[in-house]
Image (cartoon, rainbow, N blue to C red; front, top):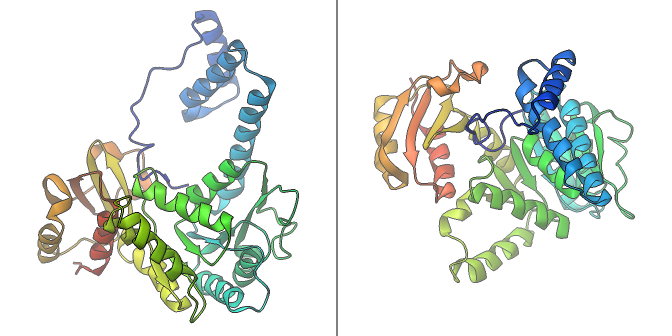
Length: 358
């Protein structure tokens, strides 16, 4: 699983092991973890065990304890389902469960997922009917994940993913939404209702605030449709004009009526750019190929406004990145940006992908 926070998790300082305050209990926990063979994760497992024991002392209500317990179980189970497919890129498709089969939006979602599968992407949806069912029909059962939510109405699994081991049933929306973003490399939104709006705005909020890594977000409508243009007009007329968002925030997404453009938007994002992470206050872009000297100069000229200090430099892996050995061989761009305009960072990724390489 990629770090969906864009390196913020890896950048967290190592803290002393959690303690119950009782050395004897601490030693028993430590021995239990050793006996259970938790390996290199022993410190984190000990921290979770101690936290659970402290909740027992906190005299929390049954409802809170059930919430915490069920949430952790759902997160663990989902992580186990996704783990065997870590080598595949994935795209999340959001949209209405009420879209009729054969409608233009349905056909567009099915076509999009099929074309992404042709480029070895797997598709993640909410597991329901409508746009979700269309996308999984296009991707095929073998290349689909369904993140279903238990509801008193509407949400039953579509026929493509029903009964598949990659269908995960969630009790809570927040654990489900976390897995959507944690496991994906791109997001495609098709017309939908409150749920689609919720999922789309959450993705944009997390990227805008730097709490989730920047990934391609494409808003797809049927040819001649006005769904996303109407949505965008509201953002411009009310949010932007009142200073509630910045114009650069609109660089975090693209709107299109063409499925091929949507597919290209995702593929081009990873043309040379691989991923990024924070190392202290420095941002490190990992690329597939090194940029030419002239291309690096162009980036520094065009994006000097995002730099808090210094310049964009090219290098190998930093010492702090040794905990990600599979990425050590990739060339890097290293710079110290302001953490206030992630839309500009999205534009920088586009520029990196368009730059000349050695």
